[in-house]
Image (cartoon, rainbow over all chains, first blue to last red; front, side, top):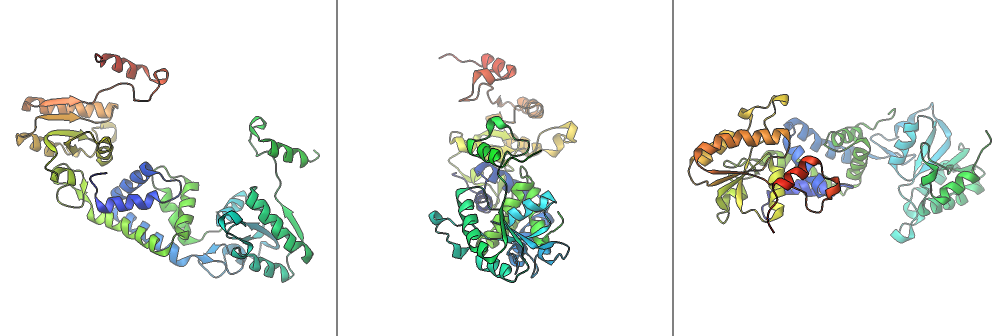
Length: 199
Length: 199
């Protein structure tokens, strides 16, 4: 645009770089920040800095935390013999929302993807193997996404873990709850059929 | 959620308060900030503060600027005898994107809305009347939104300006370019018919 107000333009650009935010939304967000009460804007800026500074990976499960161990690893009422292996911290939040899973997690920090140059060495695999080697773990649930990379990663890790004499499982495939059979793709339908259970 | 990492939670809440950002997007944005290079996060935080500190209203048109006059009011190549009256700064950006309008603007900072307790006194009307009274202005284009409040505000201002002997105009109503007649509402269609021009 021909006329730019530099500080506003820079703020818009920052918002525009965020995932899922286009040019118009970025403008709307920047104007919203301009109209915020001063204290709120200051607190927002401080929160960005604090989150970056204080948050790091849990020494055990690699989930994000602001202490040495994350709250889930610290919680003695959880079942520490079952580890759910996920790609990232957002996935942990998703499982926690179910309020049903009582075990602990392991966050890989990515998926094996030769196309993006990500090999097993870049994932938190050594940490997972160490946890299992300690002997308390009885089951590892592979909960990576049902994509090519997610499948490959799950298979790779399963092959490493099986010789250690523990149970390795994979999330069930099937029709999403509330979904419509008509719109389900063939692979999902086939997997749902394969995974059918007696009622 | 049962397990919260406080600095992360606070950042998510800040994002969630922004317009058009739901809980899941807020989470996604917060995680994105955590994974940003440190300098970028610091610059983001600084931009929020700077935008708030440095940006204020242009002394003439009330548009946002970081100097005394906004770049449009400063630009002598623009036609200062034509004023386009808009609700807010975003609307100025929208007109500037057309690259066709060569006049200047006046930003009201809102619309008359008795329901929300906003009367003419809360808008930048005195400033507009002063500009017109200085005698250089020949036309004022009312470019408020085609809503009840936008119409009422346009009519109210037009009644104030007409006795001052200048031309007061209103944006044309009609079918949006690229729109589909089938989906146009009756009022728009009727207005498009009324405003038809010879070809």
